[in-house]
Image (tube, rainbow, N blue to C red; front, side):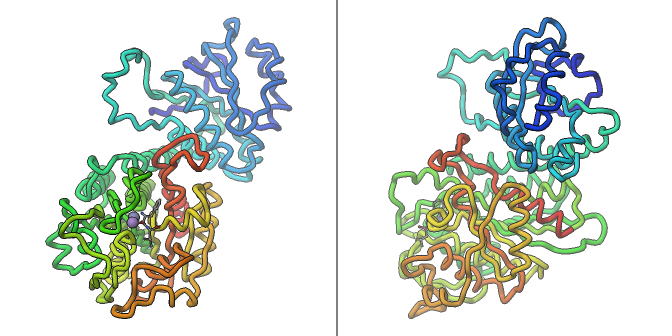
Length: 504
Ligand code: BES
Ligand code: MN
Ligand code: ZN
């Protein structure tokens, strides 16, 4: 999607679709006048309420606009940037469905929109552009098209050009908003692609390769540890989970350093289980295919580090990704096994399906020991229990630092990737005790997302600013949670980018 700014009068903008956006307020103020000017009857205003994401098409402009098709687009009340993101997603989705390759959006009202949102013009435009990336996203690379002879290949399958119409005075702000929206929008889509790729198309080595390619594209360093190197390090958690697999594990470190002196070092760790069958503690077959998304944390880490590099944020961001699939096999680890992790802490494996915490344990310890980060955050599709607690649109947040937790919550609210804090009280420690090892990977009944977090906490070597975000619910839309779009959501990328900016 190429995005250009244009200062021509609205009626002269020539595109497959001309979009006139309104907040409820601006619709009341200017709706009638603007429509008259473009040669439309105003009866449509009885049907169009400018709800966020509402779209009404108008046809037959009696030649008063260069664009053949005009769409009224609702920004809702326009009080939060999320309204603009939602609208961008709605209109771009419609454009793709209708195979309209060029879309022009009249953003001359941007000053008023920004004032309503109590935000900057650039942030409002960035949110809108992010929405356009997400709404026009389609995961169709595995469709050959061979069974659908009806598809008309002459029409564009994606938005080729998005034109944003601006007044001269707002040009700079709009351009900077576009630049930012392109980065977060495209990085989030990269994350979605990785999540959507099934287990046979994305193995541990492919996760590492995706990171290497991103590093080459965007100018940051990526180091990949192969199985031998992982053995040499003694990452017993990652190796234990990998035992039943035909595919070797990888451990990837992405290291973005800003040009000047970095103000802070932030480590972000992502669970990279390319497919989770449960191992010997095999999962039930229903819905097991969704476990191709068990590397969503890793995918968000790649997306966020890439975004930090492309935005040239003044913080060092170290991404750490332990990756493997979790398979049952004659050589697989068994329930009851005791393993020694990278930290030296021994773990009794009560359930081989609680594999995420085993691989994260090693990565967390590695992050603290080798990078001494100011902050360490991990993202993981860690527990079904977190979905039971919070559902499909909100992630669970666990942190040993109140200020850090508050910052992450705020980033979540600002970016519409909401997190809700859960406790880490010591009462829960008793639930993961083992008789024969230092700790068990299986909690007692209840509070499954908390005991998983308590387990991770043991591997941060006493670090004082750690947060764990359980994204099992919001990272992948099954359709059950009421979401229209199914598959990988890219959850966490926007939140992390916002957080990194604030810590810059
Ligand atoms: N990857 C799953 C968690 C999960 C479940 C993510 C549903 C997304 C949707 C994780 O590895 C897992 O299997 N967790 C177990 C832990 C249990 C065995 C202690 C769970 O949540 O049931
Ligand atoms: Mn599992
Ligand atoms: Zn898992």
